[in-house]
Length: 188
Ligand code: TYD
Image 1 (cartoon, rainbow, N blue to C red):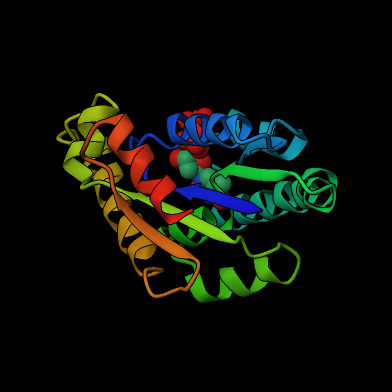
Image 2 (cartoon, rainbow, N blue to C red):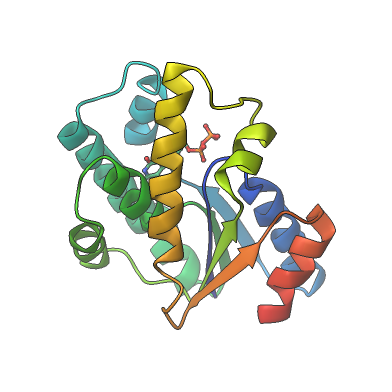
């Protein structure tokens, strides 16, 4: 079982990934929890560059390199061993964030699905950008934050554009942690 949790910053992805991992473990399953960018060499480069950003092409290349390694070294072997794999971000984040930087989301998707397995379930945690910014502690009214707001609006639109996919579930997440967890589990 391959499960991916996505959403813009501030939607609570890592909290829900952890709760879902505990839920599967309570049901007796072996669980592998992971995230992207990873803690591998490409992921570390991406995190280090988060302030002074890389040019868009280099950034996209690094996310793809990071994911290739993640798929090869962790995702494929864990699924082959019958484990439940739960990811906090995956190639849908590349569609959304690098899409917001000007790349075509459909083309990003094609490039990823050439090597990255499609999940059984994709949970998109959805929150309006105002609420998300409040949760991450900014109001979005300085010039820099204005840019961040515009970019998150674009990411959210791209995520919501996946609503028609048979494996995707949009989970409104303005409620409390427990109610969001129950909404996810209901789909499983
Ligand atoms: P995030 O999950 O916010 O990491 P953390 O909070 O642990 O530092 O991810 C870091 C940023 O990377 C986030 O703003 C989204 C971005 N990102 C992309 O732009 N493209 C991608 O393909 C992925 C996986 C993440």
